Length: 404
Image 1 (cartoon, one colour):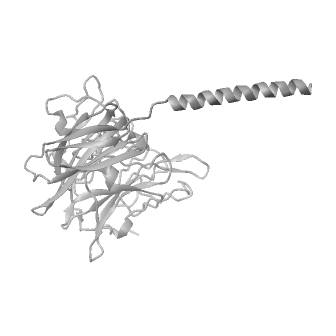
Image 2 (image 1 turned 90 degrees about the horizontal axis):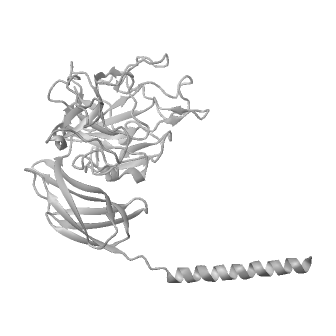
Image 3 (image 1 turned 180 degrees about the vertical axis):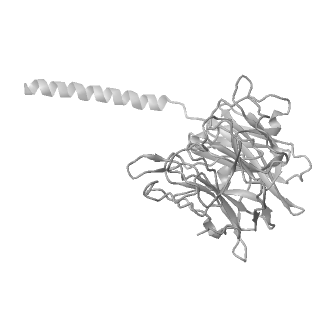
């Protein structure tokens, strides 16, 4: 019996050696992956904005976590080497200060397959002024309850005056764009000028019957539900108390929802039969703007071949835009035009009790913080392990008499 076992062991060992030798031979015969070169051309479509001297060009392969950076002259081309074959998001960005304004320039191309040498990539670059108001911090992913359940009513959006002048947020709208989640199947919109608009699925508006001034360095909080979410009857595991929020999107669909001190916003466009504002915990595309005309819900538009109702918003009216996605691999699934947001921000999952917040650009001598606003959320935002309203010393407006 022992001899049989020894014989079998010898046979198995021999087979192992043969297989190992074959694997080594296969590895020896495998061709080395050759790096590639791509040629990036910038095409300016910036209207009357001043042309920047150069652009920062970035190529990102999200699947491989591989990134290349270079620069190119305005309206020029640049050859980029050392590219590993794959699918890339390519962006061009720049910033110019001129006549008291900051102009941001951005353009992108997504899902670019660089698998052959000398790939030609054209980037159409647009220009926009930095908005005085920015979405400073967004808590959208929700939190877990003590028993492991999912809780989303603690979502909030902080809007900050990043400028030198008083801003009035009377009539300010926050809109969720179509499609609600990141997808490669984007809707097709009718009209020769379709690219001049973004399309909202829902719009909430701050009341227009009085002024709501916001001094430089002050912020307002828009809460889905402006309550202390740490209460025992809500979610003791929630990271936020939102009782001091300035505004809330009140829809009393359950007995748990009460009318809090926050000012109730107006449901300006809501075609869904379900009366509840819920930004998807997977990350929505958002814009803030002050409409030049009264929002008329009857004036809706539908994508080609679909019946969903959406509201057109001129890109020129948008003050700030932020694209949120479920994870880093979805950054290339762009919904927002690059001129508004060339990138995307993400906490990387759902119900994580984490937020995204703008990075600090500078701190003035009086302590007021200026935040990055390059119209590229991939660069402008960072992930915070714990949401915090009015982070970095942002102040509440004086008309908020219920602030804590």
